[in-house]
Amino acid sequence: GAGVSQSPSNKVTEKGKDVELRCDPISGHTALYWYRQRLGQGLEFLIYFQGNSAPDKSGLPSDRFSAERTGESVSTLTIQRTQQEDSAVYLCASSLDRLNGYTFGSGTRLTVV
Amino acid sequence: AQSVSQHNHHVILSEAASLELGCNYSYGGTVNLFWYVQYPGQHLQLLLKYFSGDPLVKGIKGFEAEFIKSKFSFNLRKPSVQWSDTAEYFCAVIPYNNNDMRFGAGTRLTVKP
Image (cartoon, rainbow over the protein chains, first blue to last red):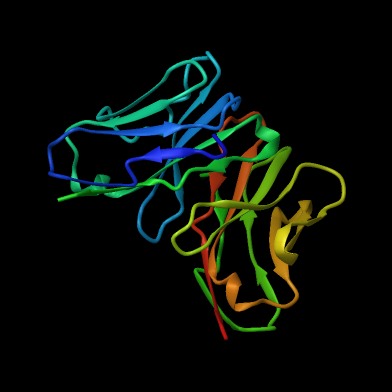
């Protein structure tokens, strides 16, 4: 598609439930990134996928967070047993290479109640 | 810890005023530098980027940024702001030999008509 697509755009979930967030990158973009943006704060790196290489998971805040990517296409970010501190906007970005910057999706606003 | 610092949290200007938003980083070696903008209700968009060459980089919408290696800075400037420049501005760095982009906390710009 023309841009990075994320779904759902908004998600309200009860504490303790699992959630799954989806990202469709720009076709042909080999790199895919997940970031978290808490209210009034900058972007916090979560995980990075590059082609078929092992993902860089160094930013995942706990083992409740995991992500998968099928080849160079869709990625899903899963948060298990959600906590209120997980409430944030989760942003996905893709890029052709590190020199061209990232194209961001509109994000998924997650609210844990 | 290595970081990207944006010292101004909120800047308020009148239309036609000049703008300078500060960005400093603490990574050594070669870095790639970016400024992103997030207009209200919209996703992050790339304003400009620096990789090498002329340290004065021109971006979209009349913005420019100057890379000063000795000061580890990449300040964003615009000679005359407009009401439509009201947005959040993020400085970002890809450190040498790193996969992910590190973001500053952002600066909120409010331009009064």
